[in-house]
Image 1 (cartoon, rainbow, N blue to C red):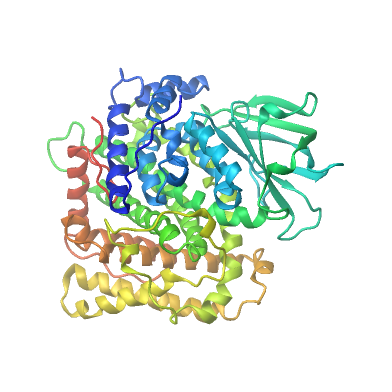
Image 2 (image 1 turned 135 degrees about the horizontal axis):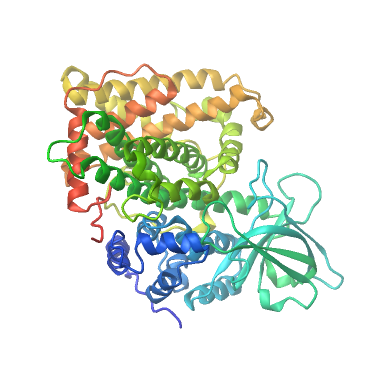
Length: 582
C-alpha cells in the first residue's frame, strides 16, 4: 500500500513535523521495558535469539510508513534534512540497532547514489518502490581492511549490443533475499584509480534464469535478527538504463554519499547507547534510598557527557550536509572516526557499573549492553569503518594545514543553533575534498569569545582554558602536518601519520562541542550552562594526552543531577532530552 506523506510545505515546519513523527513512533513502539510489549526489548531480544526479524514490529513500522523517511520530499517522501532524518529514526535504534538496519536504513544507503546522480526515471521508480513499502539494498565494492560485509565485489564488462554483464560473488548482503532493488557498486575497470567502479540499479525479478544464484543465509555474531545472505552473478545482463550517472562514477558517488551514511549512523547509534546508560543508572539507583554511590559518579557522568559530545558531533555533521554540502566531507569522516571509539569506551565503563546485571541477556532492564556490544561492529562501526575514515582524513591534512587552519572564516551560526531553519539535504550538491575546514575555523573563534571569561573563575573559566588548550593543539598539529608528504594517501600505512588523523578528529570533535554549547539559546538551562561542556572537553583532552585543568567544584555533581533527573523523568540523554515511552 502506498504511503501518504505529510512533510509540511514550508521550511519552518520541517523540524516540527519530524519531531512530531518521532514522538508518535516512540509512543507506538511503547514502553521498551514492559515485558508484555510486543515491541519491547524482551520481544526484540527473543527475536535476536531466534535469529529472525521481529515481524510484529516490522509490521508496525510498515503501518507508520517509515520507508518514506528515506525518500526526498521532492519525490513524495519525508526526507528533508539529514539531522531530522536521524531524529525520526532514533526511536527504532533506541530499541534495536539490528531492527533499524534490517528494516530499512539500508534502503537509505542504497538509494543515496540514485538521489545523487540517477536520472529522473530512476529516482521516481525507486521513490515509488519505497513509498509502496519496498526495500532496496546496497551491494558494496570491496574496501581495504574489509569486514565480511565489505569483502569481495562484483565486476561488470560491456555486453554485446549494449549494457553490461555482471559477475562475481558476495556472501554477506543485508536483505539480499527480500530487497526489491539492488544498487550494485561494480568494478568496470581493472586498473586501480578513481574511475574503477560504476553503479547500477537492478530489479532482482528481471534477472534471466541461471544468471543469479542466491546464497544461503549467514548468521553474524551481531545483528543476528537481520537477514544476511549472499548473491552470485554469472553474466547477469544489466540494461544500459540501469547505469547510475556515468561509467566510472562509482568511487566518487561512494565518497559523496557515504558522508551521509556515516553521519546518520553516528546520529542513531548514540540513541542505542543511551538505552544502556539508562540501564546503568537503574542499576546504580535501584534499591538505594540515598544518593548514587560515589564510585559510580565519574563513569555515569563521563558517559553522559560523551553521549552529548557524540550527539553534538553527529548533529553538526548532519546539519552541515544541507547548509554546506560541498564542505562536509572531511568532518563527516572525523565524526565517524571518533564516535565509535567513544561508544566502545563508554560501553566498557557502563559494564563496570552494571556488574553482574550486564550478563542478564534477556532482561529488558539490563540486556541492552550485551546486544549493543555485539551489534556495533556489524553496523559498520568496527575496524573497516575506521580505516575508510582514515583514508579520507589523512590525505587532506597537509593541504588543510597549509591553506585552511587559522585562515578560514568560521561557519554560519545556524550550523549550531537549535531550531535554526536550514536548507534541505540535496545529494546532488554533495562535494568531496577541497571544501576547506569549517570546524577547525570555528574552534579559535569560540576560544576567542570565551577568553575574557578566564578572569571570572569557576566553571566558565575552566571552559575557556580548555578551549584555548585545543587551539594550541591545533597550532601544534598544523606545524606537524605541514611536514607531511604531499601525497598523504601514501602515508596511511605509517602509524605516526595515522595518529595525526586521531589528533585532528578529536580536535574538531571539541570544536563541535564548543559550537553547540555556544549555540544554546537558554531554553535548556543545563545545556546552556558550562558543566557538561567542561566534562566533555576534559575527556576529549585526556584522550589526546593534553594537560587538562582539574574539574571545577560541583561540575560532576551538576551533570549527575541532570542525568538522574532525566532518568526519573523518562527523558533521553541526548541534546533533545526527548520524552521516552514508559
